[in-house]
Image 1 (tube, rainbow, N blue to C red):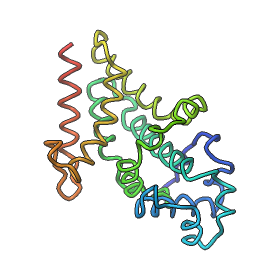
Image 2 (tube, one colour):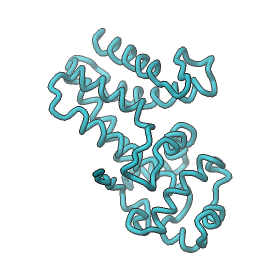
Image 3 (cartoon, one colour):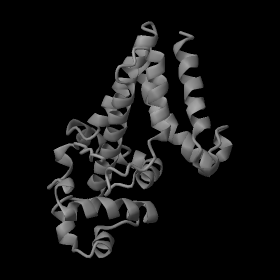
Length: 226
């Protein structure tokens, strides 16, 4: 029997935790579907209310605006990725193997998790690819950073940086490389699908093996050269 994993998200992102109620879970479930279908610009709480047979006012009881809903979803996703890496790399002593595990999960974390029935991770991953940078490429990024909105993303980068330091303590840029790997994973998946001239990686039928190999080549090439 599967056990649902509850992902903890910064409480400053919501007025009421949507994971606690059926309506809240519907907001997450159908919010993901509508954002992916319409794009963030065309997505509104009014359209979401129609989709879930509720009211705009009821949605505003959970989130102040659609930007915070997007940040919530991205934080949920990155916390899930961090959890997956932690579980998969637990008790693995070889840091190089742990890095390979982390890079694999960064590329393969789009697989739907049936244990969380109100989050379609394959659709959420599409939002990460297309809308993810909109969470922090804003005029309010410094304020939101101080409120801890990006703590989990930075924690994931720090986890990877720690592994890089274990592999080569003399490497001078572990944080920079960790952040680059996080961004690379998404960029090359997106580019392979929409801007193929920008990457050699190809993802036929959703096969992300080439992206994983690209990340490994880049990471190990740099970390072992220093």
